[in-house]
Image: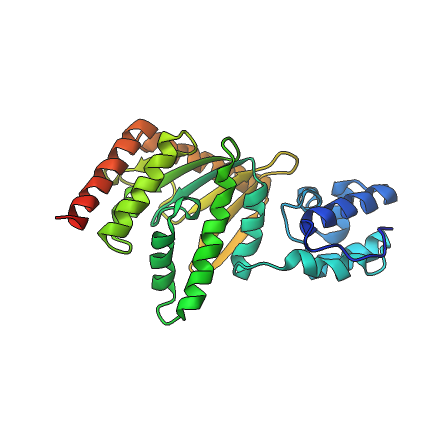
Length: 279
């Protein structure tokens, strides 16, 4: 049984909770698949809990305590691992994103969050919440920019985004905001930090016209898929669903402009916005 002390929330509680889960599972002699069967989830889901890429919900914590004979250890400590400054539907995806080694994303309507500037993010959140207090908007902007710190590492994670042309042409926040936002994306591309491809309007119908997607791969856990809608989102770990969406992303990349041509287009559009900014 894990130790009786609560986990320290300042020490990556999800990772610590996952390590304790692995220890307790191995002590009982259960495989991930066998434990998953007792919780009516997949073995890959157990692996993601152990790797810290999935959040432990209270209903699973209760079942784990029962199956593994850990008293109320997981029930007591899953609360610390669940604390987040992000909306509930998005928090688990952000936590997984921070652990990912590779991220592939299709963004149909806006510049991906990891590539946004504060001004662009502020315009997006103000559009989402037109009556919110300024303090609330600034908290959201700060949280979004904090997410992008995972790109401070010069090599990991790999971020490969296919962005619809609509996202780079929609006047989010006005010409000054758009010029800055696109120059920021272009700078990251020129630094060879990210791969961005623009899916042009003249590509016509494509494989993901119904919405966005984000695929995340990990060093020691199965891949995850995040699907997002208005005010909602969900993580998927079903292998068949992940494979299907991975193939969808490959189709999108094949239909999009090359990274070199995408960079040229992004810089051209940024220049156009710059001319409007300084007529």
